[in-house]
Image (cartoon, rainbow over all chains, first blue to last red; front, top):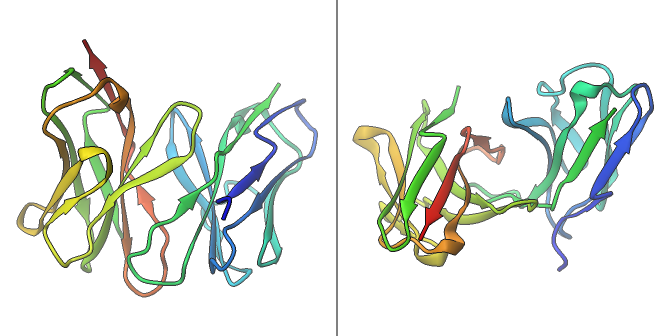
Length: 114
Length: 114
């Protein structure tokens, strides 16, 4: 398996624009997680899905953020409208539905909002 | 609620010296504990995880960690640092019940100098 695949790797956008980040989890994994990493706040869990259903979105910072998982092999994280403070590295991760199992991370998308 | 505290945001060691990265956790139930490593511009990679089968856990690249319930700690060690160990290290905790979500510490950046 190629691992968790995220696209794009880098995104530069202007404030106010819509941004869509994409993730393909490892085949067969039941859980999918979106994390955000910044210098100030470290790694924050934004939202996670189990079998394509959102389980906990309490980490989503604002209504400008939304995430979907239309099928087991694809998820998106959308920011609309984007703001400079959204600049961060966004990671997608997936895992099996077993206790004490690790999450496998993608390479991340570095988002810069100017 | 679960949490993880990593003592020391930056640690610097000489090549060949002992590496000790500290992690303390807080959990109301028996935790699952993990150490991840992040190299520059990369995603997170699992180093090792505590499985409750043994308190001393060996991971990749010569790292190991010891689970000490009485001290609520899961410190990461390596007897002899190598230049290639320079990276950021994250301790994480999750809980049983199929939730799988990882809560990360703030991270410790390890520098190795000649």
